[in-house]
Amino acid sequence: MNLHEYQSKNLFSEYGIPVQAGEVARSAEEAVQHAKNLGGDAWLVKAQVHAGGRGKAGGVKFTKDLKEVESTTAALIGSQLITKQSAPDGQPVNCVLIAAAADIDQELYLGAIIDRASRRVTFMGSRAGGMDIEEVAAETPEKIITVSVDPNLGLQDFQCRKLAFGLELDKVQRAELQKIVQGLYRLFVERDVSLIEINPLAILKDRSLCAVDAKINLDENALYRQEIANWRDPSQEDEKERKAKEFDLNYVTLGGNIACMVNGAGLAMATMDIIKLTGGEPANFLDVGGGTTAEKVAEAFKIIVSDDKLKAILVNIFGGIVRCDLIAEGVISAVKEVGIKVPVVVRLEGTNVDAGKQMLAQSGLDILSADNLADAAEKVVSAAGGGK
Image (cartoon, rainbow, N blue to C red; front, side, top):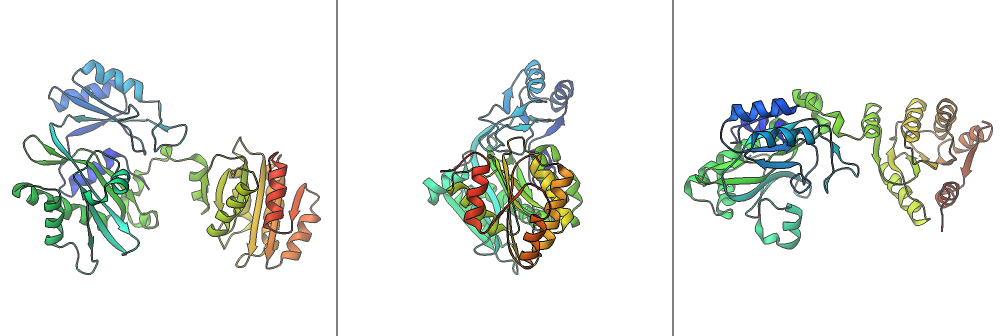
């Protein structure tokens, strides 16, 4: 689960991490009032969307004019902001953050993530702030300083000093950074965070440190114990993906026209690969899981057919935990209930496969049965009007 910048900064403040003063506005009039309340003679208008690269996409505006605060806010709210990290059609802007402009002398990078290799929370710092950390890692990895925190020992003072010296901070700034990193680590652990980024962590003209930007991702598996789970913004999520989560389905929207419904993430990826290899384009990744039911299969079909690009559907099930006859029952029920108008190709293998195939054959529905995965891919790609 992603948080907006203003939500992340609220958490930063709670954990003693310095941030700019700022207020959220949901109208142009509110934005002007917030700017007046903040005082000063310069402000930032920052679109609140779950996507990086807002500045280059016109989602962040520096201004010294209250009228420009009003016009910029009016233009942003209600728009779709397209960035290099957003969905193809952009993310909806429902509110903006009005922040006091920071007098920045230098931009640094500071982040924390769970490193799967070491199975530890790992902090990363770099003097190349304001840039994409992926580019820095690829082109100049020596500019990144990392420390991994032993979960049994917790964050150590020497690790904070390693980051501070790597960022070439002075004595006062090193003490500031230690407090910031300690706050971030407590936030990371206590709020079940999976990623934190401050880009940039600014050195201001007065030589103090300030988190000018903020990004936090939460571990969805732990949301049940976090009050901030209700901070979720559904408008920033793909509608089909959000609906799938309600029924415990793993769904990711892609750009093709052949829908896939598979049980198991590995088999789902293999299915998408063979569709691509055969000349088709997968419309989605959909893993219904090992313990699926006929009801879940029906809900999966409803999500699938909501894609207006859809030309054909491939159901590829290996009956290990789940029985093939149960899947066949779900497919038949869904095709009847949803009224599917596109070709459906079904490949079943495993437990009760003969019973499942017999049910499909006797259903009287226009469902194509496939003998193996290669056969299924050829049939569905052909049904969608493609192929090599």
